[in-house]
Image (cartoon, rainbow, N blue to C red; front, side, top):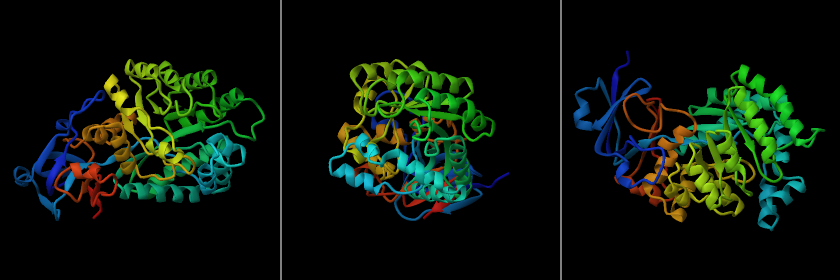
Amino acid sequence: MHKLKLIGPFAQALTMDGIPLKGPLSDDRLGVIHNAGILVNGIAIEAIGTFRELKSLASEVEQVEGELTLMPGMIDVHTHICWAGSRAGDYAMRLSGKNYLEIAQLGGGIWSTVTRTRETGQEDLALITAKHADKMLQQGVTTLEVKSGYGLHAEGEWKMLKAIHRAGEITRADLVPTCLAAHIKPKDFAGSAREYLEYTVKNILPVVMSGKLSNRVDIYVDEGAFDLQDAFHYLNEARELGFDLVVHANQFTRGGVSLAVRVGALSADHLEACAEEDIHVLAASDVIPVALPGASMGLGAPFAPARKLLDSGTSLVVASDWNPGSAPMGNLLMQAAVMGAYEKLTMAETLAALTSRASAALRLSDRGALRPGMMADFIAFPCSDYREILYNQGGMGPEVMWKKGRRVKG
């Protein structure tokens, strides 16, 4: 039996409790508690309320200094942080006017990262991944998804997923692995794109599932990647094997959203190229839209239509897409704050997209809000008014953080 530890006092705490999965949100849904304390029982939250009312229940008190605002740890549901090498050359070419496909044709793009990642050993990949995860943890991201997809053959994909698991033993952040063996058709695969996907279903996915390397499968559907028909067959095969499904959808061209809905995907990620019809299709489904503003910034492209999505009745999650090519920044809070300003999102809509709604996109019901029974993952910003967090557009990071009830920063 753990001792009950009271942490606080906090000027404000945003519980994010009871926020619906779908639709617009006003800021009065944030569940603000003033002069707050949070009671922790081991790795779980026992209670949250005013510091004064909880003090009599505590066996010990962990006092915090200064005026702080508390909220749940952020959850990043779409990252590619397991990679080797650099794509700074790609970025320079992009600034000089080359587009994404032209860069790939000139020897850059995803394949250049595949080459470097294949050459890198599993333990080194794990250390790189853990370093990236630690950086995100210091920025307030306590749980993050991590994709494979730079191996693109059986040994390379297994190596990446094992490296992600190993990185999870090194970092204090929680890592959720996703198999993205269907990133692009590898240049050294002799057959067609359909044949590569069949190879993946027969030779990669069964080992991924039986070895418990991942229970999630993603596919990149777009020009230069996989087409809708091949992706439909692949995702159905993956679902039959027991995987949750995710789709890189509507980044440059349309079609991925309808595919995600047809196969019952958990989320459709990117969505920069969404038409009104796509928004209506998402609104009539349970697929969670995931906007990736880091890719929009990295490519100089439009943001996903977040405001229209919410007003149509969908959910909205915001993720960083941190990767070495199109989204090299990796600062989730800054990206969300900037997109929120452009898309006119309320503070509640942006913060929910990083916490309570993000947890649903990973099927994690034990985090994303501050309420009894939830994992004790929370972060505190150096302000007495929660509005300062997004007002500073990423310029204010968390000063103190707790992961599973233990202080990991501050």
